[in-house]
Image (cartoon, rainbow, N blue to C red):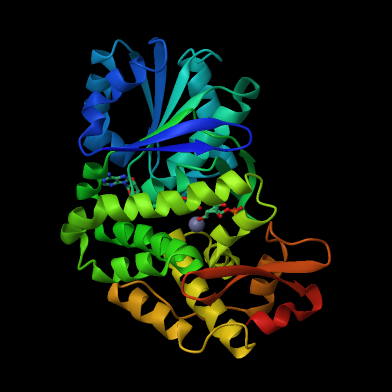
Length: 353
Ligand SMILES: NC(=O)c1ccc[n+]([C@@H]2O[C@H](COP(=O)([O-])OP(=O)(O)OC[C@H]3O[C@@H](n4cnc5c(N)ncnc54)[C@H](O)[C@@H]3O)[C@@H](O)[C@H]2O)c1
Ligand SMILES: O=C(O)C(=O)C[C@@H](O)[C@H](O)[C@H](O)COP(=O)(O)O
Ligand SMILES: [Zn+2]
């Protein structure tokens, strides 16, 4: 069992990582919050696998439970689903004194987190992440969002959970494709901050074997993100590093209508290609892109830019949230473990592709 404290400027909370924690969730929550009615927001896959278990766990801790399940997948991070979720939450009797529980992957976490930050101008919520990506990245730091047709995460908020509860055993049922998405974000964290973590991820032979290293890798990623978020909660400086691979990645996701490439796959493509460019610009040590490519290939993640219309992609990059009116802000690495931010004139946007 491990507990990590997050001391962000606007909120202090803890992250508990423990195998088998789900069955004790109700009791753990009851030790921290006064038990009452709670609404679990999840997706239908997670509901089928773990709906009964989370309900039993919460009820045995004295909670009255309603459960709302959205459709699995990125398409649920939409304005339509969000509106339906508000309606369902109101229907379930949600008030500002009830706890919302985001129980699922990054899609559920981002969507339910945004609903929590806006319904009644804010209700408390906790994160119980169930995918590797959510356990190492999206459940902490308070970024919540939905997508717009114009791009990824364009409507959102910074709204931290009250607490995060991570049960690595839940990862056993994850489909390999989604397991790999999580590894992609773990590689990102290693690239910007921790070369040892990069080597550790290279030791992972596959999903079955991951259980041995899971707590070590999860904690290393959480520590990187926690430290960055504590220094820059609002994404104005250091936090931009967590966006390594995302400038191109988000553009790829959007280009294909959030359907052909998952977030983790798109980030994998983004990390390799931006590093290749950065080597050509003389900003990154030669051979770094090749090291990233080898690790991506080892974990069956894509690295090649798909065929796309350049102008459309550049337009998508132009609406990246990191940009200022005159500059593109790029997250690059000097070598594995050393991320940095570089501003570039918007007129030079074409150099990216
Ligand atoms: N807020 C942040 O800081 C942040 C960080 C990284 C990514 N994200 C966002 O996260 C999203 C991607 O998250 P994701 O990769 O978790 O995808 P996801 O939430 O779509 O989950 C992937 C799939 O796994 C299924 N699933 C979830 N838990 C499972 C389990 N334990 N066993 C079996 N199946 C399970 C889901 O039903 C879904 O089909 C993207 O929208 C991305 O933008 C946000
Ligand atoms: O927490 C952050 O900050 C990140 O950038 C983490 C990313 O992995 C994540 O995909 C995030 O949602 C991207 O944020 P955005 O501001 O680029 O939408
Ligand atoms: Zn990401």
